[in-house]
Picture 1 (cartoon, helix red, strand yellow):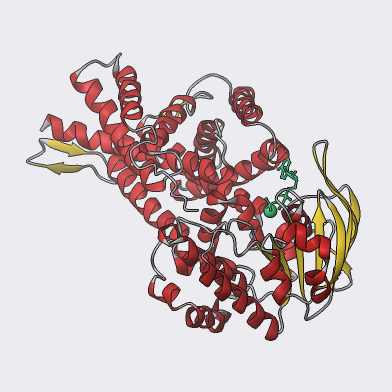
Picture 2 (tube, rainbow over the protein chains, first blue to last red):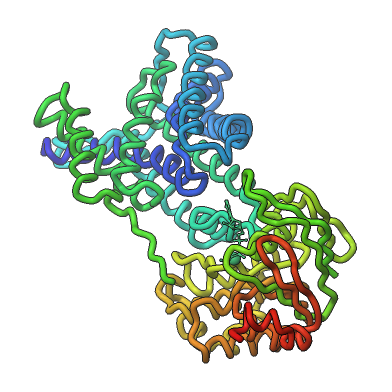
Length: 293
Length: 233
Ligand SMILES: Nc1ncnc2c1ncn2[C@@H]1O[C@H](COP(=O)(O)OP(=O)(O)OP(=O)(O)O)[C@@H](O)[C@H]1O
Ligand SMILES: [Mg+2]
């Protein structure tokens, strides 16, 4: 029964990683850059929801929507100000800029909300589920997190595969110039991608703080790196890969904590990543591009 | 219809296009021929807005399109079918055609879709297959079909015969003539000078970034020097 309980916690944590990883992977797939500030957008989402509930006294759902709106805007602004001018710059310059944006967000948060941790009250008010005569208890937050993740992946899948915007995204991802020759506005498509990724980061932030209720300016940093790992693990650029990578990473982390060592759980996570990449350099679901002459 | 004047293009300090001027009139097939590296693709990409020229003017239907982004050029129905096809290999045949019609209303493209499938029944059969799984010839048909979906007023084709078997080259050139007959103006870039000159009205010969000869195709086909250089004697 313990194992099952750990497994479910792992899936729940993995769902949060998956939601964050989706943002990483979409931005990478379409703008061909690693947005290392993505993790810190999660933190901003957390604070926004916190402010909305504690200071403005808004209901939880409204606070989530507020966090999403602010983060969406933040994502678009970051892209316009920091990344767009570097569209044809070397990848290293973009990477360093992204790290700079990350530090900027953390320090801005430090200035506004100070280093004192805020205790976040969960936005989920669902009763815990008791199974097997109460031997297995699944918290409401866990249930909601998993369901939200599934809903997000379904919506995203529909957008990417069934809509015109999604087609444009895939076209830009595969061949930016050819996409432009079809009439796709690449800048707009990249903006939309950042908007979606940042809205997802806000949701992840709220869920993360609901499960681990300590909110600090560095709250997003570690989950951000883990989710990036998850995206690489699943095959960066691949949406199903981000989902699979996130869930697996969550499970490995929780099981590692439970059965091997609490201190070593992060090391285990990264060791698994290294092994997977040695065996399959493109990640679990990363694909080789087929080219025919 | 299309007027290019005094065009100069640099890649860093490589002077790729040196003062090129030419025009295309409505209803014509005009061909731009030249050896590898002459600058043919550079000219098309500059017209499409993918590359910015250092000097020069480009007018389409009386308006300057010099500073338009590529996606805005396409909206003027000035469409390029790029070199090497550049299909979206991880999308299905149907999705590639839909991408071709990106600038148009989605519920307005059925007629062209049907027309493409009628011309290329193989594409109809494979409509749900990934473009990357098609043969080279089928991919060229799809590239042509995708360009047709945009309903171009002026269609620029960059080496549509590249790497194709002779029979298929014939078929592609027949299609170009048919498209022209039904009202599409064509700017055709080719290395296959013989074929290109046989269907075009006028031609320009490009050598290392400059136009060296121009004229009616009949005259160009009889030009002694041209025969030696491009038509194999
Ligand atoms: N991105 C680039 N950077 C630097 N130089 C380039 C670039 N693209 C083309 N060139 C150079 O510009 C010149 C013209 O190239 P272009 O591709 O326009 O020739 P082309 O006539 O289309 O040749 P081909 O028949 O081989 O397609 C060549 O000397 C080429 O090396
Ligand atoms: Mg070329």
